Amino acid sequence: MRNIWTIAKKEIKTYFTSPIAYVVIAVFLVLVGFFFYSALSWFNSQAIQMAQNPYYAQQININQMVYTPLFHNMSIILLLMLPLLTMRLFSEEKKTGTDELLFTSPVNVGQIILGKYLAALVVLAAMLGLTGLLSVFTFAYGNPEVPQILNGYLGLLLMGAAFIAAGVFFSSLTENQIVSAILTFGALLLFWILNWAAYSASGMWKDVLNYLSVFQHFDDMTRGILDTKDVVYYVSFAFFGLFLTHSVIQSRRWR
Amino acid sequence: MIEVEHLTKKYGDLIAVRDLSFKVAKGKIWGLLGPNAAGKTTTMRVLTGYLPATEGKATVAGFDVFAQPNEVKRVIGYLPEVVPLYPEMTVSDYLSFVAALKQVPAAKRKPALERAISVSNLASVKGRLIKNISRGFKQRVGIAQSLIHNPDVLVLDEPTIGLDPAQIKEIRELIKSLKGEHTIILSTHHLAEVTQTCDGVVIINEGGLMASGSLEELTASFREKDRVILRLRRGHEDALTALRTIPGVEKVTRHNGELAVEWNPGKDLRENVSRMAVEKEWGLLELRTAAMNIEDLYLRVVSGGGEP
Image 1 (cartoon, rainbow over the protein chains, first blue to last red):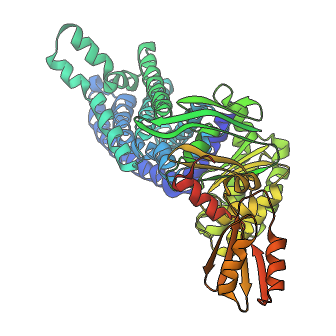
Image 2: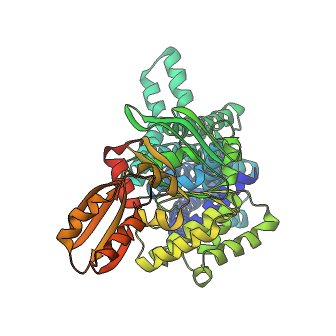
Image 3: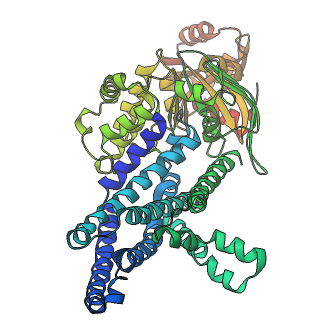
């Protein structure tokens, strides 16, 4: 555990001493702020219209009308930005030869991977945590349901954790950071749209494709549904990504 | 302290190291010598646990490199050929990170850091970002990181590469000062480095062992003839024939105004040679032994001399 933390601490420091973390967080916040503002303005105008009719007035729901679309937008931004956060994790070490320091230290490969993974998770948590400030406005002027919002954030965190694991894996494959980012983005996008293929599939394949789709599991969570099936999906996605990373690194050394 | 037995490392079909065996005793400095692509870096990578071997056995401080990698990594300090530095860290942050990575207990980290900084003479740059310091300092940071956990064994891959003559001298002095407390194995293709810093050498070429032993042992075993060089004021022609009459002398040659007298090892004919020069009044200006130097040795071994 101490070794994992040693690696993680160094990586977090690297993220925050270089512009990477600041740029990623700032751009993320600007975009999320914009989407939040748009969603809130739209909600405002809709609410004024709907309030005039007692039947519709009961259906005004800030969670569904602001948070659900916001979480979807945030997930897309994460899909675009997390590969940029993870691309350097192993690629850079390999390119600059610093992997030789790591792999000749009394630290296991698994600990190195987990340390790097944890560091990227911390940046993700900071990105998501800071967007929480936006809720000040909704809570000041409305009464959104807290559990539903937290559930959405949990979904984003789990999905981001899975994305980061994929990023770590692709970073271990190449010493070129751009290649690592493009591969991560391509793979994640493919997992995202797997459910599109499910529309034309039938039987078992439909279920399999739907289950594998990143989007399908996330959609439930933004609606306030917490299903262990979804949690298990993201956790196993992340585990599989890290496991593959371990195999890649070990096999490269044994080749 | 370091024992390598029948080590072989293949990269696919390419054999980088073949059936290599050698030993380095505690507290000694040994040079791993060979031309480029001889297998020096691969051997060091195997010893430090960065690469596994295809066959063979290696032990460091009594630990098996393959069966007990973490124990070995704890007692080895390693300076790879490309110094593993994080340019965006300061020198002290970097060294603290390496100390934690090498599992120096938290309480001992500060003294370890101070020691590494003072031994490597880095005090003036400890607060600077690594990307902003000179090449020579970067190399010293590399040595400092290999020393930070006070390892019994140091493995230094080309420690003076790319440095200017003054820096090379400094690093060599530093390495020599570490002898005794640490067992050191360093790779190089600078022959002067070996004579100045090492107690013994392992010469490898194309992955195979060509020779190993202390410098004295090796030069003695590879020397075929004892040779003295004679500088005379006059009588060269006379001397050329007269010196051959000394019993035991094999060959007398003239070269650049000097005479070289050779005989088979085992006897010392220097006295006879000097007496004749004086008696014949050739005007003896100089008489010196032409010892086999490391260059001769290296060239003989690498260019196909092989085992004596």
